[in-house]
Amino acid sequence: MLNRRNFLSAAVGVAAVGALSACAKKDDSPAASTGADGKKAIVLGFSQVGSESGWRSANTDSVKASAKTAGVNLKFSDAQQKQENQISAIRSYITQKVDVIAFSPVVVTGWDAVLKEAKAAKIPVVLTDRSVETSDESLYVTLVGSDFTVEGERAAVLLEKVLATAGHKGAVKIAQLEGTTGAAPAIERAKGFKKVMDEKHAADWKIVASQTGDFTRAGGKQVMAAFLQAHPDINVVFAHNDDMAIGAIQSIEAAGKKPGKDILIVSIDGVKDGFVAMSEGKINAIAECNPLLGDQLMEVVKKVHAGETVERWIKTKEGDFTMDQAKAALPTRKY
Ligand code: AHR
Image 1: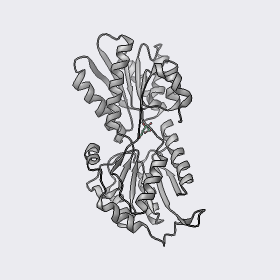
Image 2: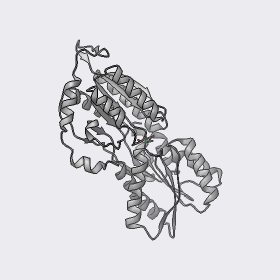
Image 3: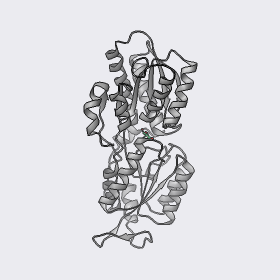
Image 4: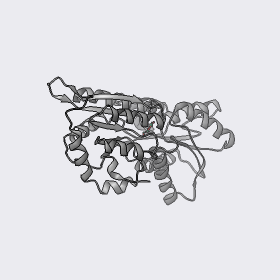
């Protein structure tokens, strides 16, 4: 898989960007429309993963609102968590001759063919939120999104704090609720968490169960119910997103246990419902993953369209939160 750290260190303009962008400034695009200022509005084809989580809804709202504010003509499609739908959407954007294509890839592999078609059509591609694995890095211009490996590391560090606060002694038996199989955040969050675990806690932390809940509440609930049957001694949940943590809470309560006390929970995202659960004492800590990528995306789309050089990976700023901070932070949460 493409190492995100490596391409960050090469975060300089890519020659291909200029080539793609210059060619993308075409005036004969049938998809082009005129903005309020009389200038031709940039046409952006955007393929979203789906609507699997609170994070995703906030991300979609952000992209739509920012496109409106920026005067970008947005063509939006929801892939319903299916790669084939995203590939069809991208092909349709190529046929429509949009100026720029952006997408948040449901999984990391399997994109080369369609990205080559976009390149052949001289349409630059911007990745948002998630990365892809590709044999040719010139197939996309940049990634606007989080460092998921670091998020996994931050979640492990938060768990250290949570265990200390709870005065936990003895073995730490962790159930991991993974995101969508093959998706960058699932792969990289697991990797980051394991790195900290292996380096610092090999003797006392163990992942006793790990399975995908597909980033959904229903998935988290179902997988956690099965985990509790097979491993009644689980004392920690690491959920790759808040929605799965919230689903897990339902199963933990149904099993007669107290989430946040009998079973400590650390998750990733920081959506409003996650903060509500944290303020109720049911989630112990959250590593934030910021979904409000719309403004950064529109800025990049404009630059790419204008033939300007952009960084290879444009990261988002994120914070960490523990239960004691939840009540105070809740009213100021934007998503
Ligand atoms: O790619 C970001 C992840 O996708 C979010 O953490 C999760 O909630 C979403 O479905």
